[in-house]
Length: 478
Ligand code: GLU
Image 1 (cartoon, rainbow, N blue to C red):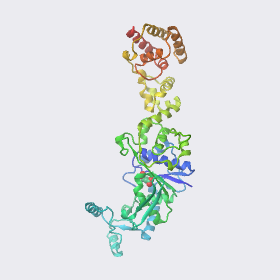
Image 2 (spheres, helix red, strand yellow):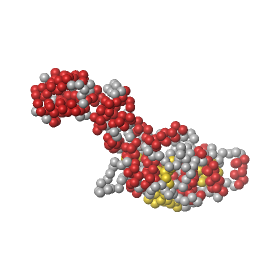
Image 3 (tube, protein in one colour):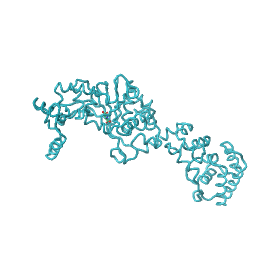
Image 4 (cartoon, protein in one colour):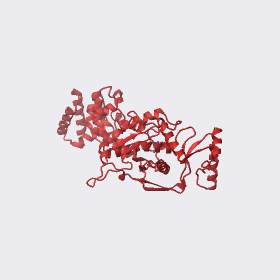
C-alpha cells in the first residue's frame, strides 16, 4: 500500500510551494489508492506557532486536500505532531548510541564556530572534525560529571557510497566523505529535522517521499540513518522549486506567496489546485491534445511522478488569472454572490440581491478573480460621456436615440425581454442594424471601449440614470 505524507513545519502561512508539495502527495495517493498523511513538524520551538498550524490546516482543507491520517482525525500511526513523539525519538536514539552509531558531542558553539572559520579560511571542506567521536570512557565520564552540555551526533561511516532512488532526479549517489558527523539530538533535548523525519517516516511506513528538492542535500544523511536503524528505504521524489518570472526563487518580492494571500486576492481553490499541478506536472496527451483545465478528481486519475519535470517551474500569474477566470465562469451567479456578499452593501445594489445577480450574470465573462466582482461595479457607476469614443452620429441615429428615450420614459420596469423588443422595433424603424446600432449606444451608456453588453445597462441602471445619459448624448450630438 502506497503511503505518502506532507510534513510542513508550522512556522508561517502555508506557502504556495508547500501547497504544491501537499497536492502532489495527495494526487499520488489518490492515483494509486494509497494513503495521504499530514504530519506537523513542530520541533523548532522558537519558530513553530499554533496560529501557523491552524493556518496550514485551514488552507489545506480549503484547497480540498484533506488527509487520510493526521491532526484532527488521527490514525493508526500517530501521534501526528512531532512534539508528541519524543519517546519514540528517545527510543531509537538509545539504539543508535548502543550500536555505536551515535555519540555525545561536548563541543561548545564557540569551539564549533572556530573550527568552521578555520576550515573556511584554509579552503578545506566545512564539516565537523569528529573531535568527540572517540572520547575515552574516562573523558566521557568526566564531561558528564561536570554537567557539560552535549548534543548527540550520528557517526557517518567512512568512504561509504550512499545511494537512493529518486523518481524525478534518477538514481542518486553520494560519497559519505562530503559529510561530517551531524547532530541528531540538540543539547536542549530536541531532535533535529534529519533525525525525526527518518524516525517518523519509517514508523509511519511511508513508501514514497515527495518533497521540494531543497531537501535533496539532506537525503544522504537520512538514508544513512535508515540503514543504520535497519529501516527499509523509501523511494524519493524531489520536486523542483517554484521560481518567480524573473527566474529567482519565489519570494515576497514576487507578490503573494501564501495560499491565504491568493485566497484574499479572489482566487478559487479549484483554480489554485489546477494551476499548482501544472507547475512541474503535465497531463499525458490524449488524442494528440494536452488538457490543461483539470479538476482534482480528474488529476487524481492521471497524476504520475514520471510526468513531473525536474527543471524549476515558473510561477506565471497571468496563467493563474486565466485558469481562475475559467473556473469562475463555471460557478453559477448565486455561488459567486455567496463568495462576494459584501457587494450587496455597495450603494449600487443597496442590498438588492436580484440586481446583484443580474450584474454578476452580465459581467461574468469579464471576471478573472472574485475581487473583480466588486471592482467592475464602476463599469456602471462611473460614467462620463466620451464624445471622441462614440464618434460622430448622423441625424438618423440621433432620432433613434430620442425614440429610445421615449421608450424608457414610458415603460414601467425594464427587463431583457421588453428591451430586446424595443431594439428590434427601433432597428426596423430606422434601418440601423447590428453593430451599427449597438456599438455607439453601448459607448454612450458605458463611456468605455469595452465592457458588459448593451442590454445589461438597461436592466442595471436606474431609469433616471438612463435618461440622464441619453439626454446628455442627444444634447451633445444634436
Ligand atoms: N518539515 C520539513 C519542511 O517543511 C519537511 C521536509 C520533508 O518533507 O521531509 O521542509
